[in-house]
Length: 262
Image 1 (cartoon, one colour):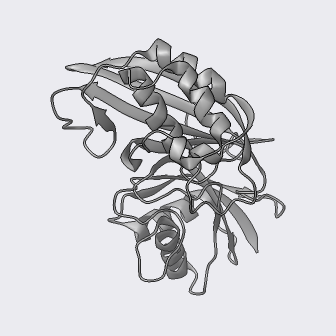
Image 2 (tube, one colour; image 1 turned 60 degrees about the vertical axis):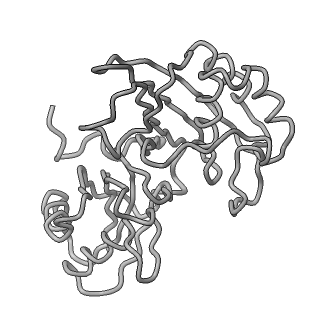
């Protein structure tokens, strides 16, 4: 068996999330079904992150084991052919050692959250951003985010159905940038950690948005975190603005990909 790492892009709207579920459309299920058409047998692929329903990916990483010795280009082309017309694409593919694991070898996950701030409705970005109409004070949000950096008990920012063994996580960075768009501005959140709790990023963004809108003070976020109570959290941001944007490994498996063009 030869192991391959796949870099995957997808639009999350049609799916219940990454993880395979019986009789429901999932990204994992769609890719495994495509692999079964290439090599007719059961396939079980593993991914770096289990994105929720409606969440997108720019660079999800998964690995699969194939009986045939495929060139990465031919394998990616074959999978993409059998994925049509679903909004999923294998954008890179490389052969890797057997000890590479898309999930357990990952050192950091990076998520992008896009907030469109303007009154006119979203058109081209509909379904790809969270739109809010009230202006946001990015400096207040940045001040609030400093309370979340580092190792903390994130019970307040954790879904009640989260299955993680501990609510303690280390948040590496929460960066915010503003980008002018027609009729308004797009605020982009770049959130990084080795791993995340269920709904953690969306809970953080939803709370920071309320700080930016003036509903909470920046120091309120410190009190929310200390409360260790889900009821203390602000609103959870909707999934359509969230993207798994990058996964970091000790050695980038795609660094010398034959599919990469510079």
